[in-house]
Length: 299
Length: 271
Image (cartoon, rainbow over the protein chains, first blue to last red):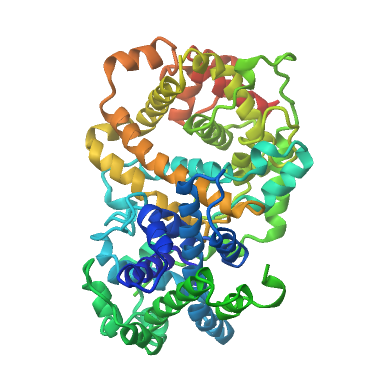
């Protein structure tokens, strides 16, 4: 599973469980309080196997004097967000691989992911009536709407084109080599690897939400048991308040629930393992194994 | 229930993509830009934000309606946010530092970035500090957005426009599938991305406000007095009318800074 809305939702639900627990280091809680958006950003980004553990390793021993605390908290939150990405992927990717292997005409794993996202938008974000908890990542009723619910604005597509390319360029500009690589050929090589492309057609997301096919809903959401609102863990999450405590066996029950509940439980368990590593209860090698990063991928 | 098939990406083969990318680059080597040999501070200033994006966007649109540009180059420069297109790489070219010689397929973007520096660098230098620079940038960008929107400006309130701008960011990320962190400095990238998004969210509200309800005094100082944009410029009218005469002298009369910059970009395309 590598779709945006599903990953950020899993991050948000996982953090809800963590925030209402006393089992995590105060530093993790502080990172989520002060840099929640950093974790959310990384929860929907690549690179968890490269960056999550090295960040935790670096700051486990303490904060270097020459690094601002605010930035360290961002990095820690980012590392934990990356772990939720991993947890969710490990649950869902095998399901998507099966759909791909089945090669049924008219169905594919990419479209299945899109349906997953549309379902998350419905269930977790209440069809856009609820946004994320970050003030810097907006979900609104416009998000899955044709023409962003602005049919009277004839230039909405042109605006979207300009802003989409603007942000694409800005994001590419965040790479360190952009200003520091002096060799033109090397610059070009690095940019070709780094530059993002539009591999997803957003119209398919809007369609999956506004006009889903019955056949595809059956195949992608019902047969996979993607999101079951009756799962006890998910019911509690959807009705949670800041002070609710989630019992360990409730969280564990996610293992036997719908795919989404499993994603949340797995992500929670990965952050729990990170907490054990951070407090010296397990070694780095053990952490890698428990978050299922093996062999050469361990750094 | 009938649904549309949005699987076009998978049919755009890798081979086609590479050849079109090369064409986009080659098309712009026809007349290499020769800027001032001695680059002063103004012309070496990297100007980011929406201004270079708009120039590249409009240059791409001009290429689509120009009778002087070959079909293969038109295709290489065509815009789409629904699929991979070679023009994406042109945007990356906007980021090349001015002292680096670009390789294909980043030529177009790099050329436009240099035109932006040359044409607008002196404007930006008038700002007394970073805060004023940012305000000026906001006014210039708002002007471009307002002109793009045309009559739609009357149909939308400031709060709705802010919501629209901010809402577009998550779909933009979704289009890329997932974001790629800096391959060498992932941890630092977390900080950069966080700061960028926070600044961007604040800026989008300010931008929407400036688009809908600009301060008249600041509009005069930054837009009118600088002769930044003139809707009656021949090249801007040609874009609006989707009509580009073959004879350059018919539409080379451009008075505004933006019109002149756009004309320069277009001349790079046609040689």
